[in-house]
Length: 136
Image (cartoon, rainbow, N blue to C red; front, side, top):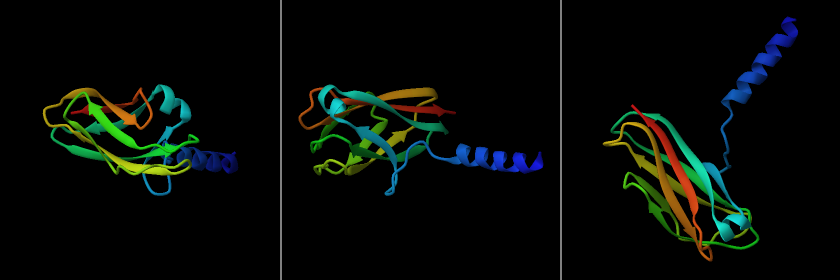
């Protein structure tokens, strides 16, 4: 019985510690498919628990999983407490664009859900990124 319990606990601990989605050069992967480039899409970036007054940054990667290149042309936010920093470089198929999402909790309290619309070249509809945090 002990021989089975220890490996099971180790496997469970390893699975619980693994990140959601990561890539070799750092950041949560946001897949950008041909469907997203044509019709838009959505994803969520979770900051978790934060204290009021904190400014947190999270690295993300727009992973080009479409057969064509794209450029991030602009973005819109529902609150000036969120910001997106990125390079205006073309992203070829199979490559990724590193970016940073910043969330400023000054003046925010409780559960927060902010909207960031990211626009790509050749796309009429944006990728909607929901920024989520619980501010204490």
